[in-house]
Length: 285
Image (cartoon, rainbow, N blue to C red; front, side):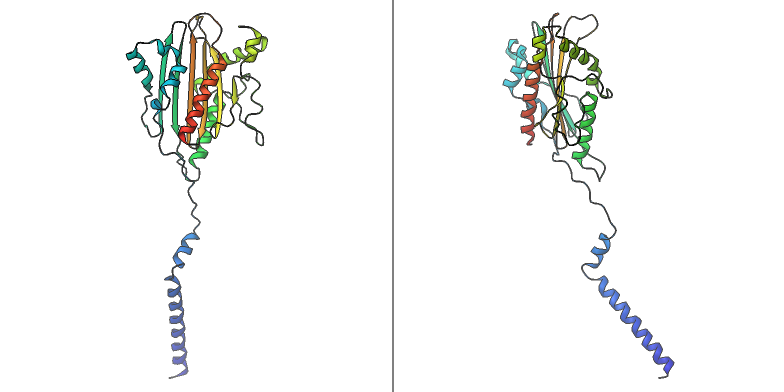
């Protein structure tokens, strides 16, 4: 074998050995996995806690409904049973949103009570359902005129001194359309007019953040008149809370039938919050 031939054979042998080594590394159990991991694919955000919703018309007990709507007890038995069943809210996707409402009239007033359950789903892989639900919740809170808590402060501080003067955003939501009526109610309370300064002063604040109710919660209390020229008074108390990726809205309304003092805000607020707390427990928070 000549020197040139020997060099050629040696070169081929080296190339074969190199190819064999590369093939052996590629067939190992860690080679392909490490290679894929190195592409940097981002992990999806975790899904929300809730994959379905409570049945709204069955989520409040009969005794509670009779307490919320005292006019029910004055109805004949058959009508009372029908009223207690409630009216389901029309919805196109019961996996995402459901609701129910009840109504009862008494000689001097009428009351309505409603529930709205919304399950929020994030369609962005990097955003969790909970984070998306919090954004939706904050939008509802701002639309109601309830300021968001400042970073580093308790959610319940700074918002419990009375109904604000309407400086928060007032867009997008039907409840926010009544903000002017709420502001006039606040002004009446501060001057002691209407039903007497002492009683007005004892009423709880009309708009505020609520502590220890789900993951986040707020209350909105609005007094208005049903229409132009009406002498009746209508009071609407809304309690909205978020638990994981579900947002619950409790609305309790009382309307007086004559020109009289506004319905008792403390009673309506206390009862609406009591129902909200029971729903938090039912959702398992």
